[in-house]
Amino acid sequence: MATPLLSIQNVSYAYHTFQGETSVLKNLSMELYPGEFVAVVGPSGCGKSTLLSLITGLIKPEEGEIKFATKTGMETTKLGYMLQKDHLFEWRSVFDNALLGLEITGKLTEENIDYVAEAFKEYGLWDFKDQKPSELSGGMRQRVALIRTLALSPELLLLDEPFSALDYQTRLSVSADIGRIIRNSKKTVLLITHDLSEAISLSDKVLVFSQRPANIKNEIPISLSIEGNHPLAARNAPEFNHYFNLLWEELSNE
Image 1 (spheres, rainbow, N blue to C red):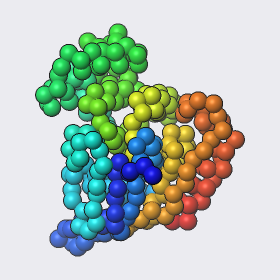
Image 2 (image 1 turned 60 degrees about the horizontal axis):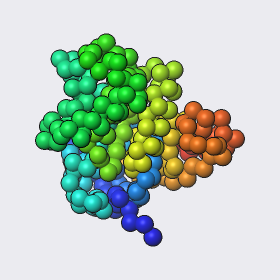
Image 3 (image 1 turned 135 degrees about the vertical axis):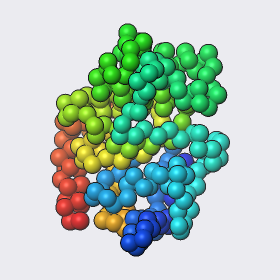
């Protein structure tokens, strides 16, 4: 049997303030296997983003443990993290923004620069490489942010609602585009989203979180009878409505 890339066992976490304690996660356990694309949905404030902070080591669990079975052990440099905002620097060209992670980690090699250049060409950004972020659309900026993340060759890619700042039409196009890019890169992915259609069309499996303190209420494997793996085509699959209604019922019961 395959070894999980990420194993979370009985993890609990609470926020502490002068007003008291707020329990966010309680005895949460899950596993993520190499090559899996897993989405997490749940009520607002249930601790989905807190989970990503725990995985990256930004905060530590109060109980339980988080283990990585990667080629590099516990090196967090092998984690890629895409946030809701692209966080591109206006004083740098978008190409230089895409190189920033490589600069910071001392990996600005000719090979890695060539990788970024090829990605810009493949994803329709090459003609805009010398422009500032404000001169690009929101969707193009998110592609730059993804290339910046992938340039570091992460083994596990964490996506924290990376399309939520986009308008609906752009979100559909960009999520499909980025989903395709990620699939082609064969990365292991954990996606946080409030969009049920997005979760179904992009992922292999959806984890449904309960109300806070969160645990995994249900785990729903996604199997759509469509050719290829294009996320927009997935929304036309005959099984799509079944999964949507199932997830909606799970969340409505919360």
